[in-house]
Image (tube, rainbow, N blue to C red; front, top):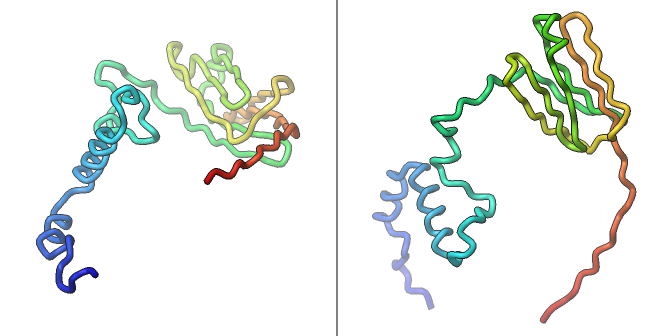
Length: 157
């Protein structure tokens, strides 16, 4: 039986936990998880990133300014709406896409590249971009994939 009055979480432990900062707790958990896995799995982070890498980008690399893009989807299409202040810059902008990302180059500066993750898988063909009243509208047709693969569940004892 568990003895009454004895708990590993006594008053001193509660006081220590209250004084700890969230960053310290996160670092402690990350370190402990790193110790649990074998060294050959060191490169895999299993969804956990160290707190230092999570908050700050590399100091020597400057990221391009973010663009103000709104992304939304309807039943048939995915729309990306981008305000463009200078109509003359349209001739320099290059737009491409994969099945789940939209890549915009040379906006606002020539060396800038922006990647926007799309909320749904889109078709290779049929994308249209139109400019009207200071707004660039990119319309991508959704790709409906009806090929399902059934997965068997094996029971182990």
